[in-house]
Image (cartoon, rainbow, N blue to C red; front, side, top):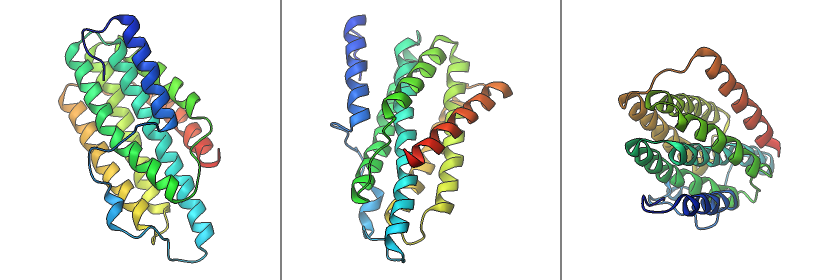
Length: 217
């Protein structure tokens, strides 16, 4: 997203523009086919309305997760001094746009809204990413590794909670889970360090607050 010849001020404005587009879903398109397209949009099991609300709440949480992933990677790319790490973060953010696009589409199909706190989630995750980017490469990648591990776990839990007949949502979450594991493996292969236990605990607590709140708001 950010050309290396841009000035610092240009980069700041590009970051703001990207953040606003992510938060409001403007111009967010997938580079891959939506895995849900092969399934019916309807949830056949009764009561349909209850199941639809449950699926929408879970997909809203997933959408928030993807917004935070965008912010985290962009924050790291913004502050890191290593061009290889910057490129890796920008590439990961581009891949995560697929997930965000799929979640946006599914929320629309379920006639639901995105989290009203998305601006707050984005700013918080961007700040964490910017801090991580200031650290050395191994610790910066460690934040990616831990984030992807936690996301993979919560996606697995969503597969257990989603209505069995909601094949569209389940297809999206299944593919997201596969991709997140690949991102974690890539970070580990690139030299990511396991974060200290207290850092992982804080990240887990923050994620719990975010997912619980986004489920309802």
